[in-house]
Length: 300
Image (cartoon, rainbow, N blue to C red; front, side):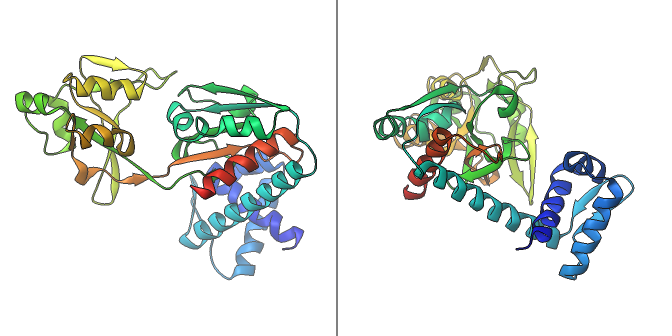
């Protein structure tokens, strides 16, 4: 790939990520006219239209979306190779700052950290565990783990797992008393155990899928909790209906403490991802952490 090809593809990805030529031009520090010429040149080279342009918005064509996605994957692999080379260049040492959602810690860091500490005794890993929305640059984090749909733009990201699915669940005793919802809109008439993302004023609206599209259902009930595992415990005790990742509630389903609801309206979505800023120079400690976690994820 020539430098020109790489720059043109990076411009395409930036326009799609930002949703406008003006914002992308500002990010890339070029004029809007120069950016328009870049895309015109790229479209001429590939022989097809890559962007749909209106006076108010810009969106990718199917060909543009595919090309941008493939370029993003290739860029991520290049970043990974650089990180792995940096980690292998010598004995890594120094601090690594990591932010992770609570479930991300449970699934990936809890079984990983002890082995990593033994393998790299000169690296100090500081982990912040919470579900708050963060900006890793302003927060000073080297690496973060979040659900794919929640990560920031303009970062390098790698999937740590396949897709996830969330489902609604309730105890048999609750359903015997209050009935079984047949459609997600029926949840408005039920006692739901609500979750609030840290830093958000509104409660989390439960997300379902029907006829090829996602939709949200605002819920309410007697309990509002900022820890999703605690919402499941409350549901098992009969307090109402809860909503969480299917794999995490499966033990409750297996032993009959909970019953799955509305599964026909539950679809998969991107799982947890490891991500970081696309910095040219990364510390050997951060590179070692990234490389080691990716290695473990590939084996699982």
